[in-house]
Length: 158
Image (cartoon, rainbow, N blue to C red):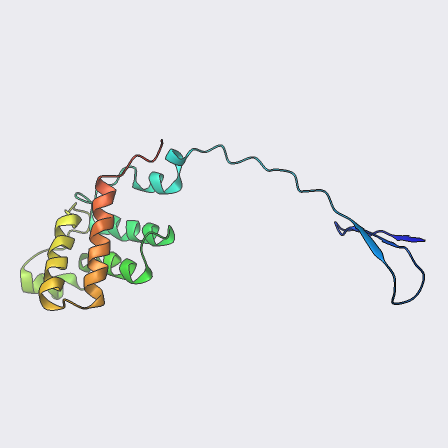
């Protein structure tokens, strides 16, 4: 009877016969891995809650909204297309004073807080009137619901 052992966590193999091709092999199961304790962090200390802790979607600057949009995308809360829609802030473009600003008479204020819930309500209303079956309507609705939830988060610590 031969005994072969492996150097890695492969089970111990024992052959019970010496007839080539007809060996009966018995396996000894490897031990179960040790349990690794959790991080000790409660749900209320989650990274998402830390991202949203000091943010109000009713008073956030375009520059901060662009950063928040990336965080929401990285956290899996919004899709890439929704991130593109939410992160695009015309006031951050260097040509704003010569393009949109020239038409509206506004100066860019990328660090001045705005009510993005109100803005996205207007965008959703526009999409409902002009493209009732388009994908932009669904994205605007989803973005608006995410922005509303940021202002009134639920308490998930039960």
